[in-house]
Amino acid sequence: MAPVAPSVAPSVASSVASFRVTLQPSGHSFSTDGSDSVLQAALDAGLTLPYGCRNGACGACKGKVLDGLVDHGAAQDQALPTSDRAGGLALFCCAKPITDLVLECREVGTAKDIPVKIMPCRVQKIERVADDVIILSLKLPANERLQFLAGQYIEFLLKDGKRRAFSIANAPHDDGFLQLHIRLIGGGEFTGHVFGAMKEKDILRFQGPYGSFFLREESTKPVILLAGGTGFAPIKAIVEHAMHNNIRRPLEIYWGARNRGGLYLPDLPSGWAAAHSQIRYVPVLSEATAEDAWQGRCGLVHRAVLEDHADLSAHQVYACGAPAMIDAARAEFAAAGLPAEEFFADAFTFAAG
Image (cartoon, rainbow, N blue to C red; front, side, top):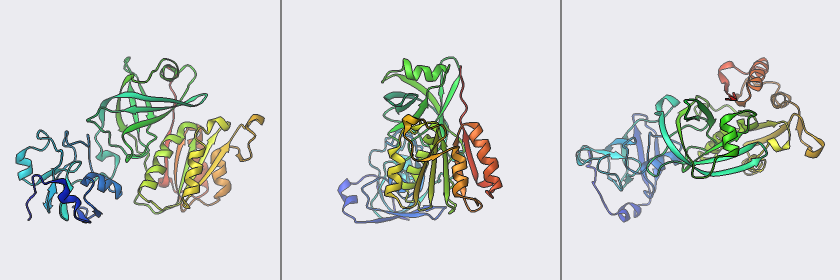
């Protein structure tokens, strides 16, 4: 077994064109030029390893180098003491390969593999994209990152002990900020605060990630992504994750709203579809007005899916929106042949208090 190098000049790693990294016990492998950390290279290859801070301070990404040499980089002594380094351990968020590597580490396959955390965050940006929709960008502490699966959600911890849940709208690879899509709810104390009194640099606390609404990547079935209103948020995360990881399964996005304003980021899914042949986007309005000058599909968004797909037996469906939409889609898609185990849903419920 080759020893683990405690430290080398970064130029040594960058002088080698390509390294092969193999993960055990899964046997998964990927190539890297050594310019990125093992963790980043694995994430770029579509393999999810555990991580926390991503700057060598917490130790969540620690694993064993079974064969090969690494540059430990900025790993901090309290997270990776000398005894750990001597024993062949490394922090994969900092370690860069100097040779081909064989690593022993756990891979994240399901939501249960990711620890739930309580974290503070700062309001970085408040962007009003519709009369009743705000995109909220949250910045985490400098030495922290939230690991999550695309489609999961967090819960804000309010001072009165109540919680408010919102889906994460960005993909895990783009985790410098957390993006949430928040709709103003009549009588809603928290959403009223977001739209009224909240300011940039305000501090909030949340717990997460939660939820089983994430893409089952082991399947090869074509995917229908059904969104109602701000249910587009986790759908956005799933699509961006799929594009980043070069998942080539057909993705059909059906986004429904009452009027044109409810499709608050219309150019985004249109752009995905224009740039990627496997992506199709179908916007649907249920109550279009004359002011909308709408030329597209009308009616209930789940019915648009059925108009296009009389037989859903070979598909997977991911649906996010109001409970009524979810319930109707589940029943009517099942009647169209969709297996019950291929319907994944996240029903938005709204609390007024």
